[in-house]
Length: 360
Image (cartoon, rainbow, N blue to C red):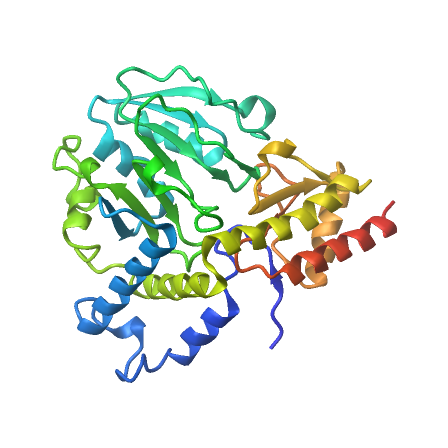
């Protein structure tokens, strides 16, 4: 079996040992005679799986008791609507737009009330994070929204915005569990799991209990109320059962790895190898302001579209998959999530050096 180095932005690389374990349990989960894919979500066995997954996530992130953990469906896009439906009591919210997903969330919120764009980095193709230390926060804003790590553009909030006492809501899809995080700084934090945690189809929401109420916007469907899922411990309807099972395995893998401090060190080490090369290369250039660089998504270009295309083609032939940049920006992007081994990044840099020599 030959595994490629998969630099996809999501669905993305998963830990090999997790995949192997899931393969071993595919036909018979721990002696119950069936696969997790086939079992009832109401069974005692499955209840154990989802409860363990939640307990491990709580332990990894030190999630306080007054926060609920919800395993939901609909991806991050559904949260763009679910958040205002549940939290926009005054029908006002402030959005910091640092990329395409924050922009989409901001546009969606306009359906439900007054969404204010209080800061943006669109003027420079989202290549930096704006200064958020003293923003014009609306006095009646229900929350302030950010996308913490911008998958397409490769930027990351290193300092959370000063929300002046307003609830902070954050989409952490592409940096979830890549480093330690203080959950108490957020009212609601969520992420699609298909980058760092599991297969596509699950979104995890961590929400402070006081934000979960019956008092949602008129017309909010039952399935789009956080209270519906919080009251039923994420089992109101059939959840994405197999995806949650894989997430649970990844949580165990993170604990075995040494937790989020160890993961951060591992990710910083990987990113440094790639960024150091980009900084000294005469052919390749990173596209993000240095202080705002993501540890997870590294976009880069040669400055020549034909050469970019040649690099993508040759890298694929050499066993490096999914290095093409997002269709909206072009160029290249290496997503180096938790499960990307350091050897993968070293091999990529060696290949880039070789390509540079041949194409000077």
